[in-house]
Length: 259
Image 1 (tube, rainbow, N blue to C red):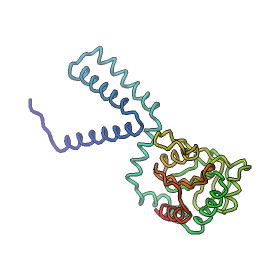
Image 2: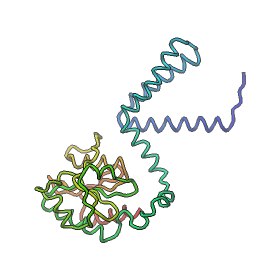
Image 3: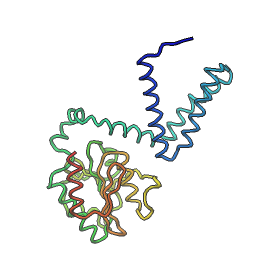
Image 4: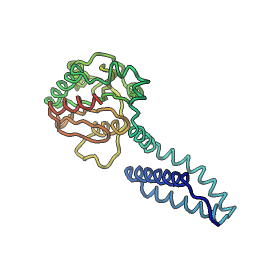
């Protein structure tokens, strides 16, 4: 028996194929490809039993497993799902819409002025020379209020000496991250999400893993000063830029914070 096949069906198949492709990519990046293959095999078996063979008893049991299994998968892969949804939003950008609803972004911005960038660069270079560890998160379009709430609120102007004093080894806030938002130091001593990626070089420490995790969960620019080597690293969108000089750091911040 013939059935109609129109443009709607083509769009439907295309969308399903794209969805499966992006889920496949997500699982592959999170090293859960075998889980994805197992889920797909179970779905095919479920469709075969319930729709084609019409086995009522086995079909009803598998229906219950599917309904409960969806909740279980959401719990198990909540971090990956969050990253997946964020990547969708990052691809779409919607810059005009964000600027319309966040007019203060137009007025204050994320801090792309030279008066904001230079104190950060100078502080990082001084801390690098003395091998003082530091972790600085510069907010862009993704709000970081939840991250700032994990530390101590400061709400101060960006100042080179203040940054260095916060990360001084005897300071009670030196182990956490500093959050900079709208040209002000918003909070310090903050806790960042740590990336568990196996692609991060083993010589990089916990600060770098925290920077990677933050850059994967948001569009923030994260600066790391290594306590062991004094090297300066920037993490953006899940990618590291290692061993930056003062000129390169200033160039990266100027370019990224103007976007």
